[in-house]
Image 1 (cartoon, rainbow, N blue to C red):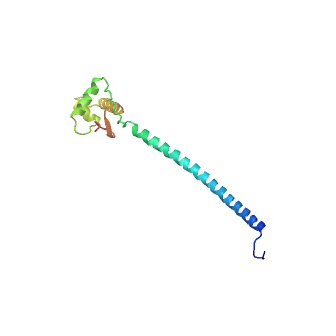
Image 2 (image 1 turned 45 degrees about the vertical axis):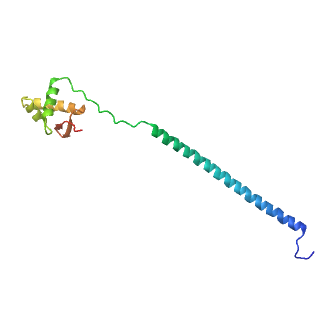
Image 3 (image 1 turned 135 degrees about the vertical axis):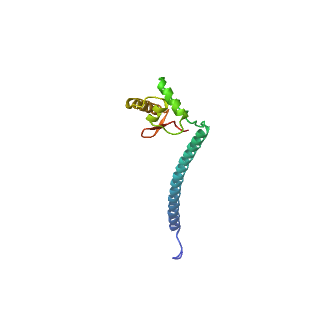
Length: 140
């Protein structure tokens, strides 16, 4: 044999080294495949959860707006008189104007009593106080 020729032992050593390199590359590829498979499985689970959530939401009935609470008017006749005044009023009223419309004597005590009743009607949602001391029926 000449000096440029490879011996059988050298060829086998090179083949063995190349086999180890390929085996290492194959192991790295398997690890990457395992990582990507786990990632793909996770994405598949999340996609399925989203699909189920969407299906569940689509099956829910349409929400209905809450029914307005019907406020109960107190039984005292003065409240009925006050509401009769507001039924004919075309603008917000103050307690004094309500007293005048009800033909109640314009006295501080009477005005205060009517104001308290108006405030109670506001608390029940029957009237609204648009600004300090100015009352009206709520507009839909």
